[in-house]
Length: 597
Image (cartoon, rainbow, N blue to C red; front, side):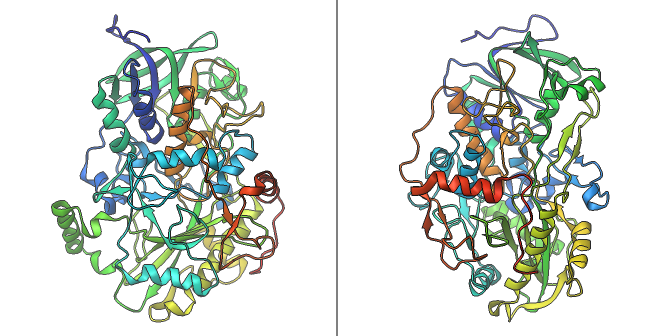
Protein backbone atom coordinates (compact mmCIF):
# COMPACT_ATOMS: atom_id res chain seq x y z
CA UNK A 1 0.00 0.00 0.00
CA UNK A 2 1.09 3.54 -0.67
CA UNK A 3 2.19 5.40 2.41
CA UNK A 4 0.32 8.69 2.76
CA UNK A 5 2.64 11.69 2.77
CA UNK A 6 2.00 15.30 3.77
CA UNK A 7 1.53 17.88 1.03
CA UNK A 8 4.90 19.05 -0.31
CA UNK A 9 3.66 22.15 -2.11
CA UNK A 10 0.53 24.33 -1.85
CA UNK A 11 -0.94 22.51 -4.87
CA UNK A 12 -0.01 19.00 -3.73
CA UNK A 13 -2.68 17.26 -1.67
CA UNK A 14 -0.68 14.12 -1.07
CA UNK A 15 -0.82 10.49 -2.21
CA UNK A 16 -3.44 7.85 -1.48
CA UNK A 17 -3.96 4.28 -2.54
CA UNK A 18 -7.39 5.01 -3.99
CA UNK A 19 -9.12 8.26 -4.89
CA UNK A 20 -12.90 8.14 -5.17
CA UNK A 21 -14.47 11.01 -7.10
CA UNK A 22 -17.93 11.71 -5.69
CA UNK A 23 -19.54 10.94 -2.33
CA UNK A 24 -22.90 10.10 -3.82
CA UNK A 25 -24.70 6.77 -3.52
CA UNK A 26 -21.99 4.70 -5.20
CA UNK A 27 -19.03 6.61 -3.77
CA UNK A 28 -20.26 6.17 -0.21
CA UNK A 29 -20.57 2.40 -0.72
CA UNK A 30 -17.07 2.20 -2.18
CA UNK A 31 -15.56 4.21 0.66
CA UNK A 32 -16.94 1.84 3.25
CA UNK A 33 -16.22 -1.42 1.43
CA UNK A 34 -12.76 -0.58 0.08
CA UNK A 35 -11.90 0.99 3.44
CA UNK A 36 -12.50 -2.33 5.19
CA UNK A 37 -8.81 -2.98 4.50
CA UNK A 38 -7.19 -0.83 7.22
CA UNK A 39 -3.96 -0.57 5.20
CA UNK A 40 -5.69 1.08 2.28
CA UNK A 41 -5.57 4.90 2.34
CA UNK A 42 -8.58 6.41 0.60
CA UNK A 43 -9.44 9.97 -0.38
CA UNK A 44 -13.04 10.84 -1.28
CA UNK A 45 -13.54 14.10 -3.18
CA UNK A 46 -17.02 15.65 -2.97
CA UNK A 47 -18.02 18.97 -4.53
CA UNK A 48 -20.88 19.56 -2.11
CA UNK A 49 -20.96 19.87 1.64
CA UNK A 50 -22.37 18.16 4.71
CA UNK A 51 -25.68 16.32 4.62
CA UNK A 52 -26.49 17.13 8.24
CA UNK A 53 -29.86 18.87 8.08
CA UNK A 54 -33.36 18.15 9.34
CA UNK A 55 -34.70 18.66 5.82
CA UNK A 56 -32.67 15.69 4.60
CA UNK A 57 -33.31 13.51 7.63
CA UNK A 58 -37.09 14.05 7.68
CA UNK A 59 -38.67 11.76 5.06
CA UNK A 60 -41.78 13.83 4.33
CA UNK A 61 -39.64 16.94 3.71
CA UNK A 62 -38.21 15.37 0.56
CA UNK A 63 -39.25 18.23 -1.75
CA UNK A 64 -37.27 20.80 0.26
CA UNK A 65 -33.67 19.60 -0.35
CA UNK A 66 -34.66 18.82 -3.92
CA UNK A 67 -35.30 22.54 -4.37
CA UNK A 68 -32.38 23.84 -2.28
CA UNK A 69 -29.15 25.10 -3.90
CA UNK A 70 -27.11 23.74 -1.02
CA UNK A 71 -28.07 20.15 -1.87
CA UNK A 72 -28.89 20.32 -5.59
CA UNK A 73 -26.65 21.12 -8.58
CA UNK A 74 -29.55 23.00 -10.16
CA UNK A 75 -29.19 21.49 -13.61
CA UNK A 76 -31.60 22.05 -16.49
CA UNK A 77 -31.82 20.21 -19.77
CA UNK A 78 -31.36 21.63 -23.22
CA UNK A 79 -34.68 22.32 -24.98
CA UNK A 80 -36.27 18.94 -25.59
CA UNK A 81 -37.36 18.57 -29.25
CA UNK A 82 -39.91 15.84 -28.50
CA UNK A 83 -41.63 18.08 -25.94
CA UNK A 84 -41.93 21.19 -28.11
CA UNK A 85 -38.71 22.65 -26.75
CA UNK A 86 -39.48 22.38 -23.03
CA UNK A 87 -36.51 22.87 -20.72
CA UNK A 88 -36.77 20.25 -17.98
CA UNK A 89 -35.67 20.34 -14.37
CA UNK A 90 -32.81 17.97 -13.57
CA UNK A 91 -32.08 17.89 -9.83
CA UNK A 92 -28.90 16.04 -8.90
CA UNK A 93 -27.68 15.59 -5.37
CA UNK A 94 -24.76 17.78 -4.28
CA UNK A 95 -23.26 16.87 -0.92
CA UNK A 96 -22.58 13.77 1.12
CA UNK A 97 -24.92 11.01 0.04
CA UNK A 98 -25.52 12.61 -3.35
CA UNK A 99 -28.97 11.98 -4.75
CA UNK A 100 -29.72 9.48 -1.96
CA UNK A 101 -29.92 12.57 0.27
CA UNK A 102 -32.55 14.34 -1.84
CA UNK A 103 -34.52 11.56 -3.55
CA UNK A 104 -38.01 10.26 -2.76
CA UNK A 105 -36.63 7.27 -0.78
CA UNK A 106 -38.70 4.75 -2.78
CA UNK A 107 -36.86 1.46 -2.33
CA UNK A 108 -37.34 -0.67 -5.45
CA UNK A 109 -34.94 -3.43 -6.40
CA UNK A 110 -36.38 -3.70 -9.90
CA UNK A 111 -37.55 -6.87 -11.58
CA UNK A 112 -35.18 -9.86 -11.64
CA UNK A 113 -35.56 -9.83 -15.42
CA UNK A 114 -33.89 -6.41 -15.47
CA UNK A 115 -30.62 -8.05 -14.55
CA UNK A 116 -31.12 -10.92 -16.97
CA UNK A 117 -31.48 -8.23 -19.63
CA UNK A 118 -28.24 -6.63 -18.41
CA UNK A 119 -26.48 -9.96 -18.82
CA UNK A 120 -28.07 -10.56 -22.22
CA UNK A 121 -26.74 -7.20 -23.36
CA UNK A 122 -23.18 -8.10 -22.47
CA UNK A 123 -22.92 -7.29 -18.77
CA UNK A 124 -21.60 -10.75 -17.96
CA UNK A 125 -21.86 -11.63 -14.26
CA UNK A 126 -24.73 -9.22 -13.56
CA UNK A 127 -27.64 -11.67 -13.83
CA UNK A 128 -30.24 -11.98 -11.08
CA UNK A 129 -28.48 -14.81 -9.26
CA UNK A 130 -25.30 -12.69 -9.19
CA UNK A 131 -26.82 -9.45 -7.91
CA UNK A 132 -29.34 -10.88 -5.41
CA UNK A 133 -26.65 -11.57 -2.74
CA UNK A 134 -25.61 -7.92 -2.92
CA UNK A 135 -29.14 -6.66 -2.44
CA UNK A 136 -29.30 -8.93 0.58
CA UNK A 137 -25.96 -7.67 1.91
CA UNK A 138 -26.99 -4.02 1.79
CA UNK A 139 -30.52 -4.33 3.23
CA UNK A 140 -31.74 -4.09 6.79
CA UNK A 141 -35.32 -5.34 6.49
CA UNK A 142 -37.16 -6.63 9.53
CA UNK A 143 -38.96 -9.90 8.80
CA UNK A 144 -38.34 -9.69 5.08
CA UNK A 145 -38.08 -13.41 4.36
CA UNK A 146 -35.40 -15.59 2.73
CA UNK A 147 -34.80 -13.34 -0.30
CA UNK A 148 -34.13 -10.24 1.80
CA UNK A 149 -31.29 -9.00 3.96
CA UNK A 150 -31.61 -8.22 7.67
CA UNK A 151 -28.32 -6.69 8.78
CA UNK A 152 -27.16 -4.30 6.04
CA UNK A 153 -26.38 -0.57 6.12
CA UNK A 154 -29.61 0.57 4.41
CA UNK A 155 -32.75 0.42 6.52
CA UNK A 156 -35.85 -0.51 4.53
CA UNK A 157 -39.35 -0.18 5.95
CA UNK A 158 -42.97 -0.05 4.89
CA UNK A 159 -45.34 2.74 5.66
CA UNK A 160 -48.18 2.23 8.13
CA UNK A 161 -50.80 2.59 5.36
CA UNK A 162 -53.14 4.31 7.78
CA UNK A 163 -54.84 6.21 4.96
CA UNK A 164 -57.64 4.08 3.43
CA UNK A 165 -56.76 5.21 -0.09
CA UNK A 166 -53.54 3.16 -0.14
CA UNK A 167 -55.33 -0.16 0.11
CA UNK A 168 -58.18 1.07 -2.07
CA UNK A 169 -55.69 1.54 -4.91
CA UNK A 170 -54.42 -2.02 -4.53
CA UNK A 171 -57.93 -3.48 -4.37
CA UNK A 172 -58.96 -1.48 -7.44
CA UNK A 173 -56.02 -2.99 -9.28
CA UNK A 174 -57.16 -6.45 -8.23
CA UNK A 175 -60.66 -5.64 -9.47
CA UNK A 176 -59.18 -4.62 -12.82
CA UNK A 177 -57.57 -8.03 -13.17
CA UNK A 178 -54.02 -7.35 -12.02
CA UNK A 179 -52.02 -9.46 -9.62
CA UNK A 180 -51.46 -8.31 -6.05
CA UNK A 181 -48.05 -8.73 -4.40
CA UNK A 182 -47.51 -8.63 -0.67
CA UNK A 183 -43.94 -7.42 -1.27
CA UNK A 184 -42.76 -6.25 -4.69
CA UNK A 185 -39.10 -6.48 -3.58
CA UNK A 186 -39.34 -10.14 -2.61
CA UNK A 187 -40.62 -13.01 -4.72
CA UNK A 188 -43.12 -11.21 -6.96
CA UNK A 189 -42.34 -7.86 -8.56
CA UNK A 190 -45.30 -7.68 -10.95
CA UNK A 191 -48.65 -6.45 -9.65
CA UNK A 192 -49.90 -3.91 -7.13
CA UNK A 193 -49.15 -3.76 -3.43
CA UNK A 194 -47.37 -1.93 -0.60
CA UNK A 195 -44.17 -0.05 -1.37
CA UNK A 196 -41.01 0.10 0.70
CA UNK A 197 -38.86 3.11 1.51
CA UNK A 198 -35.25 3.63 2.54
CA UNK A 199 -36.17 4.91 5.99
CA UNK A 200 -35.09 3.65 9.38
CA UNK A 201 -36.18 4.87 12.80
CA UNK A 202 -38.22 7.58 11.13
CA UNK A 203 -35.14 9.05 9.36
CA UNK A 204 -33.92 8.95 5.78
CA UNK A 205 -31.52 6.04 5.32
CA UNK A 206 -29.10 7.60 2.85
CA UNK A 207 -25.82 6.25 1.55
CA UNK A 208 -23.98 8.82 3.64
CA UNK A 209 -25.65 7.64 6.82
CA UNK A 210 -25.39 3.92 6.08
CA UNK A 211 -21.99 3.71 4.42
CA UNK A 212 -19.87 6.85 4.55
CA UNK A 213 -20.00 7.72 8.23
CA UNK A 214 -18.90 4.24 9.36
CA UNK A 215 -16.11 4.41 6.76
CA UNK A 216 -14.90 7.77 8.08
CA UNK A 217 -14.96 6.47 11.64
CA UNK A 218 -12.25 3.90 10.81
CA UNK A 219 -9.64 6.59 10.21
CA UNK A 220 -8.25 5.43 6.85
CA UNK A 221 -10.91 7.18 4.72
CA UNK A 222 -10.55 10.93 4.28
CA UNK A 223 -13.50 12.87 2.88
CA UNK A 224 -12.88 16.32 1.44
CA UNK A 225 -16.01 18.37 0.82
CA UNK A 226 -16.07 21.46 -1.38
CA UNK A 227 -13.65 19.72 -3.77
CA UNK A 228 -14.60 20.48 -7.38
CA UNK A 229 -12.92 17.97 -9.68
CA UNK A 230 -11.59 19.27 -12.96
CA UNK A 231 -10.05 16.18 -14.53
CA UNK A 232 -8.24 12.90 -14.06
CA UNK A 233 -4.49 13.14 -14.66
CA UNK A 234 -2.63 10.55 -16.72
CA UNK A 235 0.93 9.38 -17.25
CA UNK A 236 0.62 8.01 -20.75
CA UNK A 237 -2.60 6.03 -20.56
CA UNK A 238 -2.44 5.32 -16.84
CA UNK A 239 -4.51 7.40 -14.43
CA UNK A 240 -2.23 8.75 -11.72
CA UNK A 241 -4.04 11.61 -10.01
CA UNK A 242 -6.88 14.09 -9.86
CA UNK A 243 -6.83 17.83 -10.41
CA UNK A 244 -9.41 19.75 -8.39
CA UNK A 245 -10.07 23.04 -6.65
CA UNK A 246 -10.67 23.42 -2.94
CA UNK A 247 -11.50 26.73 -1.31
CA UNK A 248 -10.47 28.52 -4.46
CA UNK A 249 -7.05 26.88 -4.71
CA UNK A 250 -5.90 24.44 -7.39
CA UNK A 251 -4.95 21.08 -5.91
CA UNK A 252 -3.58 17.77 -7.14
CA UNK A 253 -3.91 14.43 -5.37
CA UNK A 254 -1.98 11.35 -6.46
CA UNK A 255 -3.32 7.78 -6.55
CA UNK A 256 -0.88 4.96 -5.95
CA UNK A 257 -3.25 2.20 -7.00
CA UNK A 258 -6.24 3.58 -8.88
CA UNK A 259 -8.98 6.16 -9.24
CA UNK A 260 -12.67 5.35 -9.09
CA UNK A 261 -15.02 7.79 -10.78
CA UNK A 262 -18.44 7.84 -9.08
CA UNK A 263 -19.79 11.29 -9.90
CA UNK A 264 -23.09 10.05 -11.35
CA UNK A 265 -24.61 9.68 -14.79
CA UNK A 266 -24.28 13.38 -15.63
CA UNK A 267 -20.99 14.44 -14.08
CA UNK A 268 -19.01 11.23 -14.61
CA UNK A 269 -19.00 11.55 -18.41
CA UNK A 270 -18.38 15.29 -18.02
CA UNK A 271 -15.20 14.69 -16.01
CA UNK A 272 -14.11 12.00 -18.48
CA UNK A 273 -14.54 14.38 -21.41
CA UNK A 274 -12.53 17.11 -19.67
CA UNK A 275 -9.86 14.46 -19.08
CA UNK A 276 -9.55 13.71 -22.80
CA UNK A 277 -11.73 10.60 -22.84
CA UNK A 278 -14.78 10.86 -25.08
CA UNK A 279 -15.90 11.59 -28.64
CA UNK A 280 -12.79 12.99 -30.31
CA UNK A 281 -14.47 15.78 -32.27
CA UNK A 282 -16.35 17.02 -29.19
CA UNK A 283 -13.07 17.23 -27.26
CA UNK A 284 -11.27 19.01 -30.08
CA UNK A 285 -14.11 21.51 -30.35
CA UNK A 286 -13.33 22.54 -26.77
CA UNK A 287 -9.55 22.56 -27.19
CA UNK A 288 -9.03 19.37 -25.16
CA UNK A 289 -6.25 16.95 -26.13
CA UNK A 290 -7.72 13.57 -27.06
CA UNK A 291 -6.28 10.78 -24.92
CA UNK A 292 -8.76 8.15 -26.16
CA UNK A 293 -11.55 8.51 -28.71
CA UNK A 294 -14.44 6.87 -26.81
CA UNK A 295 -17.58 7.71 -28.77
CA UNK A 296 -20.02 6.32 -26.18
CA UNK A 297 -18.85 8.46 -23.26
CA UNK A 298 -21.87 10.66 -22.54
CA UNK A 299 -24.17 8.85 -24.98
CA UNK A 300 -26.95 6.30 -24.31
CA UNK A 301 -28.53 8.59 -21.68
CA UNK A 302 -31.77 7.11 -20.29
CA UNK A 303 -34.36 8.31 -17.80
CA UNK A 304 -37.84 7.53 -16.50
CA UNK A 305 -40.59 9.95 -17.47
CA UNK A 306 -43.96 10.05 -15.76
CA UNK A 307 -47.25 11.91 -15.72
CA UNK A 308 -49.62 12.53 -12.83
CA UNK A 309 -53.13 11.15 -13.24
CA UNK A 310 -55.06 13.07 -10.59
CA UNK A 311 -58.55 12.53 -9.22
CA UNK A 312 -60.63 14.63 -6.86
CA UNK A 313 -61.64 12.83 -3.67
CA UNK A 314 -65.24 13.18 -2.46
CA UNK A 315 -64.44 12.21 1.14
CA UNK A 316 -62.05 14.26 3.32
CA UNK A 317 -59.55 11.44 3.80
CA UNK A 318 -56.60 12.62 1.71
CA UNK A 319 -53.51 14.40 3.02
CA UNK A 320 -54.93 17.76 1.97
CA UNK A 321 -56.17 18.39 5.52
CA UNK A 322 -52.53 18.49 6.68
CA UNK A 323 -51.21 20.85 3.99
CA UNK A 324 -51.89 24.13 5.81
CA UNK A 325 -49.02 25.90 7.55
CA UNK A 326 -50.43 24.78 10.90
CA UNK A 327 -50.83 21.21 9.70
CA UNK A 328 -47.27 21.06 8.45
CA UNK A 329 -46.02 22.55 11.71
CA UNK A 330 -47.79 19.81 13.67
CA UNK A 331 -46.27 17.14 11.45
CA UNK A 332 -42.82 18.64 11.90
CA UNK A 333 -43.12 18.98 15.66
CA UNK A 334 -44.28 15.39 16.10
CA UNK A 335 -41.39 14.17 13.97
CA UNK A 336 -38.83 16.26 15.83
CA UNK A 337 -40.05 14.95 19.18
CA UNK A 338 -40.78 11.32 18.33
CA UNK A 339 -39.51 10.49 14.79
CA UNK A 340 -43.02 9.23 14.09
CA UNK A 341 -46.19 10.37 12.40
CA UNK A 342 -46.69 11.76 8.90
CA UNK A 343 -43.20 13.24 8.96
CA UNK A 344 -41.64 9.77 9.10
CA UNK A 345 -42.92 8.59 5.71
CA UNK A 346 -42.36 9.56 2.08
CA UNK A 347 -46.12 8.98 1.57
CA UNK A 348 -45.56 6.61 -1.37
CA UNK A 349 -46.91 3.64 0.57
CA UNK A 350 -48.53 1.68 -2.26
CA UNK A 351 -47.82 1.30 -5.94
CA UNK A 352 -47.40 -1.26 -8.64
CA UNK A 353 -45.73 -2.61 -11.76
CA UNK A 354 -47.75 -3.71 -14.80
CA UNK A 355 -47.27 -4.41 -18.49
CA UNK A 356 -48.60 -1.91 -21.02
CA UNK A 357 -49.46 -4.51 -23.66
CA UNK A 358 -49.25 -8.22 -24.50
CA UNK A 359 -45.89 -9.51 -25.66
CA UNK A 360 -43.82 -8.10 -22.80
CA UNK A 361 -42.24 -10.65 -20.43
CA UNK A 362 -42.26 -8.26 -17.48
CA UNK A 363 -43.65 -4.86 -16.44
CA UNK A 364 -42.74 -1.70 -18.29
CA UNK A 365 -45.03 0.67 -16.33
CA UNK A 366 -44.70 1.73 -12.69
CA UNK A 367 -47.28 3.30 -10.37
CA UNK A 368 -46.48 5.45 -7.34
CA UNK A 369 -49.76 6.10 -5.54
CA UNK A 370 -50.15 9.21 -3.38
CA UNK A 371 -53.24 10.22 -1.33
CA UNK A 372 -52.82 13.84 -2.41
CA UNK A 373 -52.92 15.73 -5.72
CA UNK A 374 -49.55 17.53 -5.86
CA UNK A 375 -46.43 17.72 -8.02
CA UNK A 376 -43.45 15.56 -7.08
CA UNK A 377 -41.29 18.56 -6.20
CA UNK A 378 -44.08 20.08 -4.11
CA UNK A 379 -44.29 23.26 -6.18
CA UNK A 380 -47.96 22.93 -7.16
CA UNK A 381 -50.96 21.37 -5.44
CA UNK A 382 -54.62 20.97 -6.38
CA UNK A 383 -57.21 22.79 -4.32
CA UNK A 384 -59.15 20.33 -2.21
CA UNK A 385 -58.94 16.63 -1.45
CA UNK A 386 -57.57 14.36 -4.12
CA UNK A 387 -55.33 11.43 -4.97
CA UNK A 388 -53.01 10.52 -7.84
CA UNK A 389 -50.55 8.13 -9.33
CA UNK A 390 -47.22 8.98 -10.87
CA UNK A 391 -47.08 6.59 -13.83
CA UNK A 392 -44.77 6.14 -16.77
CA UNK A 393 -42.68 3.72 -18.85
CA UNK A 394 -39.57 2.14 -17.39
CA UNK A 395 -37.82 1.11 -20.62
CA UNK A 396 -38.14 4.10 -22.88
CA UNK A 397 -36.34 3.65 -26.19
CA UNK A 398 -35.44 7.34 -26.41
CA UNK A 399 -31.75 8.04 -25.87
CA UNK A 400 -29.99 11.27 -25.06
CA UNK A 401 -26.56 12.63 -24.32
CA UNK A 402 -24.30 14.56 -21.94
CA UNK A 403 -21.74 16.88 -23.56
CA UNK A 404 -19.35 19.54 -22.42
CA UNK A 405 -20.55 23.12 -22.53
CA UNK A 406 -16.94 24.25 -22.34
CA UNK A 407 -13.61 23.08 -20.97
CA UNK A 408 -14.20 25.23 -17.88
CA UNK A 409 -14.87 22.93 -14.87
CA UNK A 410 -17.21 25.57 -13.44
CA UNK A 411 -19.61 25.15 -16.36
CA UNK A 412 -22.29 22.50 -15.99
CA UNK A 413 -22.63 20.25 -19.04
CA UNK A 414 -25.24 20.33 -21.76
CA UNK A 415 -27.80 17.56 -21.24
CA UNK A 416 -30.48 16.44 -23.66
CA UNK A 417 -32.53 13.32 -22.98
CA UNK A 418 -34.38 13.42 -26.32
CA UNK A 419 -37.52 12.58 -24.36
CA UNK A 420 -40.37 11.03 -26.37
CA UNK A 421 -38.27 10.86 -29.52
CA UNK A 422 -39.17 7.21 -30.17
CA UNK A 423 -42.66 6.39 -31.44
CA UNK A 424 -43.11 3.50 -29.02
CA UNK A 425 -42.72 5.85 -26.05
CA UNK A 426 -45.96 7.58 -27.08
CA UNK A 427 -47.84 4.28 -27.19
CA UNK A 428 -46.59 3.41 -23.70
CA UNK A 429 -47.33 6.79 -22.17
CA UNK A 430 -50.87 6.87 -23.57
CA UNK A 431 -51.37 3.34 -22.25
CA UNK A 432 -50.10 4.45 -18.84
CA UNK A 433 -52.82 7.10 -18.62
CA UNK A 434 -55.64 4.93 -19.93
CA UNK A 435 -54.77 1.95 -17.75
CA UNK A 436 -54.62 4.22 -14.68
CA UNK A 437 -58.05 5.60 -15.51
CA UNK A 438 -59.36 2.07 -15.73
CA UNK A 439 -58.07 1.26 -12.24
CA UNK A 440 -59.51 4.47 -10.79
CA UNK A 441 -62.87 3.51 -12.36
CA UNK A 442 -63.12 0.24 -10.39
CA UNK A 443 -65.70 -0.30 -7.65
CA UNK A 444 -63.32 0.07 -4.65
CA UNK A 445 -62.91 3.75 -5.57
CA UNK A 446 -66.67 4.40 -5.85
CA UNK A 447 -66.98 6.07 -2.42
CA UNK A 448 -64.03 8.37 -3.12
CA UNK A 449 -63.95 9.13 -6.82
CA UNK A 450 -64.71 12.70 -7.86
CA UNK A 451 -63.90 14.47 -11.10
CA UNK A 452 -60.66 13.72 -12.92
CA UNK A 453 -58.32 16.65 -12.34
CA UNK A 454 -55.59 15.64 -14.78
CA UNK A 455 -55.50 15.03 -17.67
CA UNK A 456 -59.23 15.83 -17.30
CA UNK A 457 -62.32 14.11 -18.66
CA UNK A 458 -62.10 16.10 -21.90
CA UNK A 459 -58.73 14.53 -22.83
CA UNK A 460 -59.72 11.28 -24.53
CA UNK A 461 -58.23 11.12 -28.02
CA UNK A 462 -54.60 10.31 -28.78
CA UNK A 463 -54.11 13.92 -29.81
CA UNK A 464 -55.55 15.20 -26.54
CA UNK A 465 -53.35 12.89 -24.50
CA UNK A 466 -50.28 13.77 -26.54
CA UNK A 467 -50.85 17.46 -25.87
CA UNK A 468 -51.19 16.76 -22.14
CA UNK A 469 -48.04 14.63 -22.14
CA UNK A 470 -45.99 17.29 -23.93
CA UNK A 471 -47.10 19.96 -21.48
CA UNK A 472 -47.08 18.04 -18.20
CA UNK A 473 -44.75 15.05 -18.35
CA UNK A 474 -41.95 15.20 -15.76
CA UNK A 475 -38.73 13.36 -15.10
CA UNK A 476 -38.63 10.83 -12.29
CA UNK A 477 -34.96 11.89 -11.91
CA UNK A 478 -33.41 8.52 -12.80
CA UNK A 479 -30.65 9.27 -15.36
CA UNK A 480 -28.37 6.37 -16.23
CA UNK A 481 -26.42 4.67 -18.99
CA UNK A 482 -23.89 7.31 -20.11
CA UNK A 483 -20.85 5.05 -19.57
CA UNK A 484 -22.47 1.69 -20.14
CA UNK A 485 -20.70 -1.54 -19.32
CA UNK A 486 -20.60 -4.33 -21.87
CA UNK A 487 -18.54 -6.83 -23.81
CA UNK A 488 -18.60 -4.98 -27.13
CA UNK A 489 -15.78 -2.69 -28.16
CA UNK A 490 -17.93 0.45 -28.02
CA UNK A 491 -18.88 -0.16 -24.36
CA UNK A 492 -17.13 2.18 -21.94
CA UNK A 493 -16.65 -0.15 -18.96
CA UNK A 494 -15.62 -3.79 -18.58
CA UNK A 495 -18.38 -5.51 -16.55
CA UNK A 496 -16.01 -7.95 -14.87
CA UNK A 497 -13.63 -5.36 -13.44
CA UNK A 498 -15.43 -1.97 -13.72
CA UNK A 499 -12.28 -0.69 -15.46
CA UNK A 500 -12.69 1.90 -18.16
CA UNK A 501 -11.61 0.48 -21.47
CA UNK A 502 -8.63 1.98 -23.36
CA UNK A 503 -6.91 3.29 -20.21
CA UNK A 504 -5.39 1.90 -17.02
CA UNK A 505 -5.89 2.71 -13.35
CA UNK A 506 -9.40 4.15 -13.79
CA UNK A 507 -12.67 2.48 -12.85
CA UNK A 508 -16.22 3.78 -13.14
CA UNK A 509 -18.86 2.84 -10.59
CA UNK A 510 -22.25 4.55 -10.57
CA UNK A 511 -25.55 4.47 -12.49
CA UNK A 512 -23.78 5.63 -15.64
CA UNK A 513 -22.56 2.06 -16.26
CA UNK A 514 -26.07 0.55 -16.37
CA UNK A 515 -26.76 -0.92 -19.82
CA UNK A 516 -30.50 -0.51 -19.27
CA UNK A 517 -32.65 1.36 -16.77
CA UNK A 518 -34.40 -0.96 -14.34
CA UNK A 519 -38.15 -1.30 -13.86
CA UNK A 520 -38.40 0.95 -10.83
CA UNK A 521 -36.64 3.67 -8.89
CA UNK A 522 -32.89 3.63 -9.44
CA UNK A 523 -31.28 4.20 -6.04
CA UNK A 524 -31.45 0.64 -4.72
CA UNK A 525 -29.94 -0.79 -7.96
CA UNK A 526 -27.19 1.83 -7.81
CA UNK A 527 -26.28 0.86 -4.25
CA UNK A 528 -26.30 -2.82 -5.22
CA UNK A 529 -24.12 -2.10 -8.23
CA UNK A 530 -21.56 -0.34 -6.04
CA UNK A 531 -21.61 -3.18 -3.50
CA UNK A 532 -20.74 -5.72 -6.17
CA UNK A 533 -18.26 -3.39 -7.87
CA UNK A 534 -16.40 -2.95 -4.59
CA UNK A 535 -15.90 -6.70 -4.46
CA UNK A 536 -14.78 -6.83 -8.09
CA UNK A 537 -12.21 -4.13 -7.35
CA UNK A 538 -10.97 -6.32 -4.50
CA UNK A 539 -10.75 -9.30 -6.86
CA UNK A 540 -13.61 -11.31 -5.44
CA UNK A 541 -17.38 -11.70 -5.51
CA UNK A 542 -20.08 -13.34 -3.46
CA UNK A 543 -21.24 -16.75 -4.72
CA UNK A 544 -24.29 -16.71 -6.95
CA UNK A 545 -27.53 -17.21 -5.05
CA UNK A 546 -28.64 -20.83 -4.90
CA UNK A 547 -32.27 -19.69 -4.77
CA UNK A 548 -32.98 -16.87 -7.20
CA UNK A 549 -36.51 -17.28 -8.57
CA UNK A 550 -37.65 -15.21 -11.54
CA UNK A 551 -41.43 -15.06 -11.67
CA UNK A 552 -43.54 -13.90 -14.57
CA UNK A 553 -46.91 -14.38 -16.18
CA UNK A 554 -47.16 -17.62 -18.12
CA UNK A 555 -49.46 -15.99 -20.67
CA UNK A 556 -47.38 -12.85 -21.24
CA UNK A 557 -47.36 -13.30 -25.01
CA UNK A 558 -51.16 -13.16 -25.24
CA UNK A 559 -52.30 -11.15 -22.21
CA UNK A 560 -51.56 -7.67 -20.93
CA UNK A 561 -52.54 -8.55 -17.34
CA UNK A 562 -52.64 -11.66 -15.21
CA UNK A 563 -54.23 -12.19 -11.83
CA UNK A 564 -51.57 -14.76 -10.95
CA UNK A 565 -47.82 -14.38 -11.48
CA UNK A 566 -46.29 -17.79 -10.88
CA UNK A 567 -44.25 -18.90 -13.90
CA UNK A 568 -40.65 -19.43 -12.78
CA UNK A 569 -38.03 -18.86 -15.49
CA UNK A 570 -35.09 -20.42 -13.63
CA UNK A 571 -35.13 -23.59 -15.71
CA UNK A 572 -34.95 -21.67 -18.99
CA UNK A 573 -32.52 -18.82 -18.30
CA UNK A 574 -31.03 -18.73 -21.80
CA UNK A 575 -34.47 -18.84 -23.40
CA UNK A 576 -35.60 -16.03 -21.11
CA UNK A 577 -32.66 -13.84 -22.14
CA UNK A 578 -33.47 -14.48 -25.79
CA UNK A 579 -37.10 -13.49 -25.15
CA UNK A 580 -35.96 -10.33 -23.40
CA UNK A 581 -33.70 -9.29 -26.25
CA UNK A 582 -36.43 -9.99 -28.77
CA UNK A 583 -39.28 -8.27 -26.96
CA UNK A 584 -37.73 -5.40 -24.99
CA UNK A 585 -34.04 -5.33 -25.75
CA UNK A 586 -33.94 -4.17 -29.35
CA UNK A 587 -33.20 -0.47 -29.53
CA UNK A 588 -35.43 0.08 -32.54
CA UNK A 589 -38.15 -2.49 -31.97
CA UNK A 590 -41.39 -1.77 -33.83
CA UNK A 591 -44.32 -0.48 -31.84
CA UNK A 592 -46.54 -3.32 -30.71
CA UNK A 593 -50.33 -3.23 -31.01
CA UNK A 594 -52.16 -1.60 -28.13
CA UNK A 595 -55.15 -3.46 -26.72
CA UNK A 596 -56.57 -0.16 -25.54
CA UNK A 597 -56.53 1.59 -28.90
